[in-house]
Length: 212
Figure 1 (cartoon, rainbow, N blue to C red):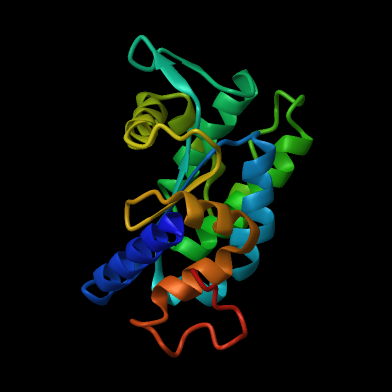
Figure 2 (cartoon, rainbow, N blue to C red):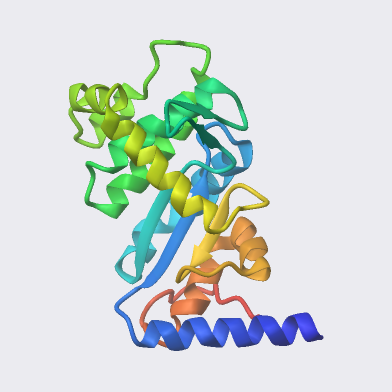
């Protein structure tokens, strides 16, 4: 009962905050070779994002339970060196795409392609970047330069503020709530629709409101 009461308070606080700002801020902390990240992005986020995009300010942060060594000279990642490669590539590409829907399309493509081709040293998600309208030569330069390292260090800084116990972790307006996290993994659309329902009553006309 106490847990439900606290969740209601948290949800009402988020809705009140949303009434004072333009959009609901959603941040996804994830990893390039994490099966749970792949599942969330391909089954929850990507299928509904175009519908939710007018009401959501999305930030995608590819880092998760990784760590930098010697100020970014090396990175250690939960699923091995290829995951570090995938995280940095995505940071470089996302840094060049201003449109959030295109970002989601790109990450959806990359997560599926990179996991399938992870043993291929020549795989950098080129086709996914090109489909998003990104010059892959520019991304290759970013990946091999100090810019790619800086982007991953920034991702680490953002992620460290939360120190996620589970990847992916989904934040709403910069806050973590376990009940919303759990619900987001099985029905992201319903969670977002609930949180934006007061500020945007015209959104989410389908039968998808979650009751917290």
